[in-house]
Length: 321
Length: 288
Image (tube, rainbow over all chains, first blue to last red; front, side, top):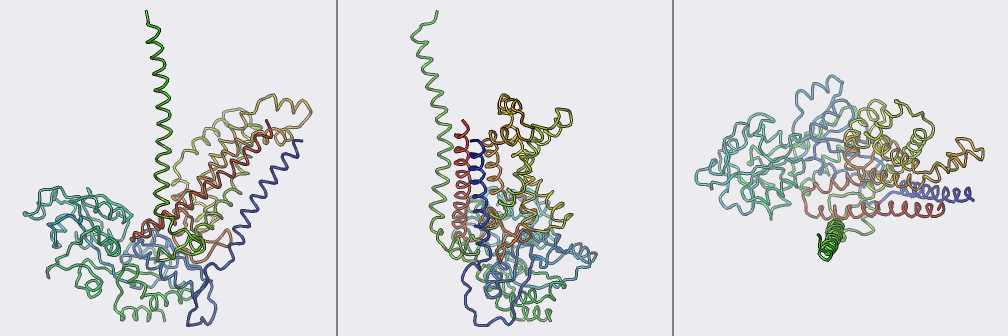
């Protein structure tokens, strides 16, 4: 009696397990969505793994390129992680990844580790991002800020507590600051350009690794100020107000044009991709990087970043040969 | 001298008050769940269609799908279950049935209970340095499943121990009286009678593994993969990480897509729990 009941139960359990396994197994080899027909037939079928990690800022670009690349080369396995620029380089410089996404150039200390581990790499500029300084939509007094005012607000020894401390005619209301977390390349770049030293900043601001938290924070706080990547401004134009930046040549608003032609200096910055030479000699990695710098560049604007001049992509392609 | 009428009224009142407080407590949690679910459904349901289940993630919210994340989660959970369930049950049986009651076993038991409360990120760090780097398993499903197994084994061991302790001694003694060996008793009496309790622990633990993201981020789950996992050494993405990735995208459409993904994850958890509860109840009835 008991043993038949136990058998019954065991059968149910095993059946369930088998069902789960077959479900995953039969789904696995099926090539998922219908491949879109491409005009250029790939000469040889490329296979292999590409391990990418790094900046969350660059992730949307790489993801978009990988999305299109896999339609042409469905057997190349591209895996993209998001560990931040610094976190990505930690893995890249010990040889755990093939490509590192970075929203700032590699630091000397990181390059030294790579050299120690005999990791040779090539740097590619892939796009521009314009760090956008934002205030609340109902803020009616701030139109532009000079670089000096930004420095006064953000420097480590800042005495700015209220908006009046920035400009005398502005209201005597406490200024609430929002910024990306200290692990991000965006934070490194902003502090370097504004305060003169990467990582040097006052400490009483609200940090978040998730830029949407910054967007929500600024949108919900009338006397707030914050900065983040251009893509987040593009998507949130209706709930935030952009601040024009005056670096001595008059106030400039970040747009696709001003970022591309360099008038939105110095807060426009290039973003990078680092590829190990060991990976670059492999056909599938080479094909991916080539695709990135040719057809892939059309995707950059779609995800809210700014394309480089054609000549810069040509320079990158030349490094591939 | 107490007035018996007012005394009775007081009793009635406190009785009603208790009733009211307990009911409020129950309704508050249900209310929150209803709000959460209705918000999710209102935002996410427009994305749920066949393509959503069959597509890869895309830069366009409307073309995005959850297939790689769903399969990744499935691979991870099944492998985790295969590793952790036999190990946990065996460990619990050893501790309850075989091990001598001495200082060493008490030390082990206390440690297992403590491990059940260790923050999950700590297991992630362990997984990264031990499975990914020292053992060289890389950022694979296997590394993830081993880490997850470590994370949920204490929960399962403690639950199994509790279940075994609940078995009346008379059952065991009856088995011994009939001449059964220790192994036969464990196999024939202890495990079957403890199964409902063991299954409860397994359900809770597996659900936890399905919803965890922090340790997997450290162990190296990816935010995007371009091919589906074919084996335990492949790279992978899981649903909680897909949800996080979409949540942090700039466009508002992706936040609604996130709601859709959360709906699927919750449905998956619910199905898992329901299946296990049904099996458990069926089994429980046959033994009473």
